[in-house]
Image (cartoon, rainbow, N blue to C red; front, side, top):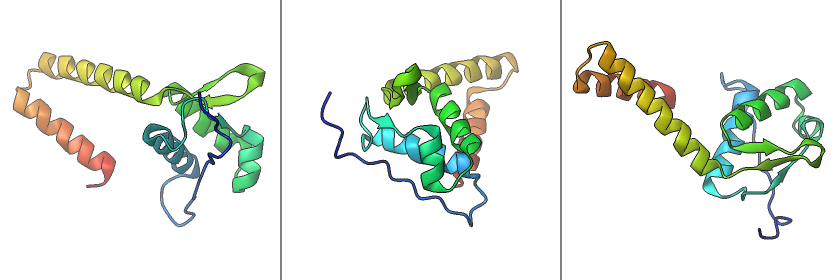
Length: 130
């Protein structure tokens, strides 16, 4: 593992968006971890420290951290802190499992392959705002 002292967490919350602050925080940390801007093993600030820095409630930051941990993006090592995990692998595994589950469910519902794919495309467009 390299020297992470020069790496900084960059969070820019937009108070004028409809997206909740915890989701903005979750999304930005996740994106930075997946892009490599936050390398595996990077130690994140404590919940309280980040909440104070961003002017958020500690519960808001804790909710974002819980979601990131559930997604496999970060891992908490008890009193040692919270660190960026190997997010890409975990995200790929979770996405593949979700896709497999959806495909099986769509088949059981009697959807054709084209119908199943169309439903996924619609859902992805809605999720990504396009």
